[in-house]
Image (cartoon, rainbow, N blue to C red):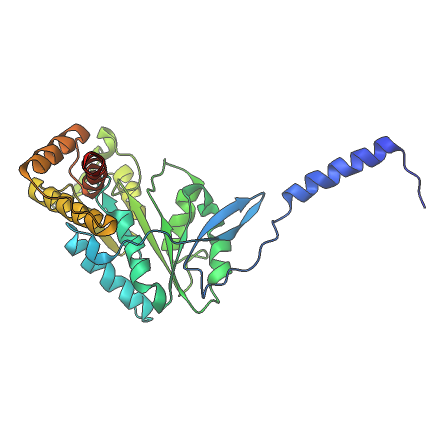
Length: 294
């Protein structure tokens, strides 16, 4: 038996402790029968899938003002679940218009039919091949969701996603679709000079090399689904719907009136945005004050 000096033992303990921190975390395999959603959690040089309890109960019929968008996404997701050809999708447009809500509602609609969602942050896209490897042999259909995604030119995660969409060595397995939400159609910032350098070829204006590169990622999504701000009438419909939902949930009626309408319009002006998120935020404020004073 080797007798080590106390200071050497202490050093070895520190080294072993440091090494242990770098080792992959021991986690149980996800039971996808009962787990409908997961996050990719980074740890040291790799990561693992962490189960997430689904608490958002939004249903597709509760989303108003986005009927055409719902139709496109429902049809595409249905095809995917049935094992038919389906497209990766880019949901882009103004903030708060229902992009993320549609994906959550799709999970609530099709979860019992085998649909699952894995949310991946932008910086973790560098692990995309490991994520695919963890689920490619599972008998479920997965949407890999990248929410509120934007890039800066040259980021590694941008290149990894581009490769995955392009059918290269990092391409998604047959049971995975990629859904991305973003405020930007091209996922990259646009500048005034981007369009300079275009030229006419046989009478048609061709994009500049900069614009061509910036559109190259979004072009790899089979579906572009745009989301725009609401008209005032559509916004007020959303407010009414939110009030009705609160009335049902709380078991106390919150009536519609001209005062509510005017307050809702003022709220949207203060927010400088007419969208579903603004309607929901106003409804919480109005219902809370109304029932507190009742």
